Amino acid sequence: MTNHVLHLAYTFYENDNRVIRYVETLAEQGADVEVIALRRRGECVNARRNGIWIFRLQQRTVNEKNGLSYLLKILLFLVRSSLLISIRHLRRPYDVLHIHNVPDFLVFAAWLPKIMGARIILDIHDILPELFAGKFSAKENSFVFRCLLAIERLSCTFADHVIVANDIWRDRLVSRSVSEKKCTTIMNYPDLRLFKPLPESAKRNDGKFVMMYPGSMNYHQGLDLGVKAFARVKDELPNAEFHIYGTGPAKPELEVLIHQLNLSDCVFLYPEQSIDEISKIMANADLGIIPKRSDGFGNEAFSTKSLEFMACGIPIIISGTRIDRFFFNDSIVVFFNPQDEIALADAIRRTAGDKVKMRHLSQKALKFVLEKNWKKNKSLYNKIFTLFSLIW
Image (tube, rainbow, N blue to C red):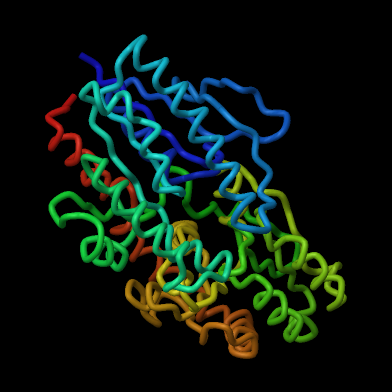
């Protein structure tokens, strides 16, 4: 019998490569998969994509300025998703419900299927106590942080299995919230069907040198540092442009900064794109910039974009955070000291002016990512279903 699987995520499905990979992998193997996610203004509530039903349950604009507004939106999503899941489960039971954080407590939307015997996976994209502390400047000994830690433990206990996005976070979760045998690391591996080098005939031929960042616009991503660094080198790279794709709470500040530094003719903020579109845009860039901060959450949050740029054959400059130095070395990326816009400017200057170095980096990185991709590692996901004795 075909397995009936639900993915629940407080995200925009078409933009979340991690969720898409899981869903399409299951569908390709014969599972009947549904998705409950967010929607943007103007999108249909329900849609069908590649044979998968997507229920866009709640509209969201990513503009939260404080913890309360962020929490209220999530709580509303929790209530709505719990009701929809319960109704659909009574009509046709789910075998597995794969719940993606943020937040961890979204896993409790599956309370009725859990009672009735369904298996629950909690997928921790970001560890919530540290994410909240970084996003809203909360201290680790604060009441809110301790509450989030308690929620993390309860959520991991409720789930039958926990997936986490990197080994550093797995070690932390095992030390405080979940047993080792119940926790699997699955990184944000790129899908090489989408992220791949462009043929020479399809590349830009406009004489420009395009630096690019695609992703969320949050403080910990360090985009203000990237813009300031670009301002330092733009006169030395007269054909250079910095393209930033995405959305998030830091966008208004970035718009002001770009205006203040007189960069409106060479630094551009573009809307967030679907995975299908952004993969093509990334492959047409000249240099990837990942300037995240190393304080708190950013020091351990692995950027999916690093491997995606590598898969596209694009060299990258990346902040030397703990997580990135854990996975990479100087032969495949250009590191700079985190929070140092002068060091980032120097890295851009040295890299953009050296075509031989850029070609060497892209070749080494492409070789590296051939072992670090979803096709090579999706068996980790299948093993979890094997543990549940749900093999198709």
